[in-house]
Length: 419
Image (tube, rainbow, N blue to C red; front, side):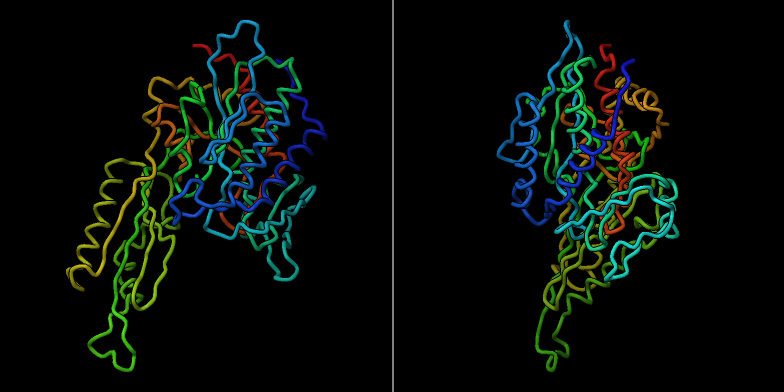
């Protein structure tokens, strides 16, 4: 087996590539109907497009919707291996500020509190996040406490690009053709909507979009988004008796109608939830946004029916037309798409073991582009990218975790995959 010599030069390539990516503002917007959903995503899309061309990948393209495709050519004399792919997304979550990211590098982490921002006193502490204790002696990359980091999923992109560069620089590592795809808008559930599976040309692929080292996932939530609009009536408060209908107060009452023990913070494992993600209101109008999640398909349908029934119940109490709901499907559990195709998982599991990583096969309490792509005919399990505490100012990633992800990609690339 060819040894992957990931020396300091390659570690710095990986680190610097990731730092460059996270500094580019690329938050997506669920309110937008365009693809990409934000103009700013074109900045990173164009940056990556030019980078891939400069590295010498083949057939590099950037389409009108912001999807990037590129290929590492096969270097086998008699290539009868299936084309496989690796996919990540370059948008960051609208859940927290993603503008003006100032990543900080902490070499040889000592296991103590990290003061991320002297002005605000913002601290990343192992007292609050015990996972930090697993990274003593590692190189951590964090935020400055004012933004998210963007390891979800710019770590995945940095890993895939670095692995591709490594394969091109080491022709002694034999592999079949490798397809690479980068998408916009994954964070708002639309990352795979316009992905060209036929053009991509892979028999299967892997999203590099998981968390801690060793994660390997091929089942996920069924997912939908729900928007509840409540209509009030605004009049001067001095003359409001018997007339005013305060949409903000009604919104608060509707929120209480959903079970308080079925939220992300009160559920785990295979338990589903209703997650209130946004609330905008004044006296006249209120807009409540939820995401609905469940691993079980029947329970998922029941959840959608339940929230719809609550809107009807709300209108019975306050008058027909007071509230309305719109539910949009986002993605489905991809588990059933791997029936008879478990070799796809087996290859990734062995690639981890070959990199001295213990595989942690589990269900995703979330979703990836791979969930939708699996239903589009491209089986696509999810592999760790190394980031921790996504979507907020406590987000961090260890350089060593990213390095391990690169090695897993390379091990998958060189594995014998013909069935």
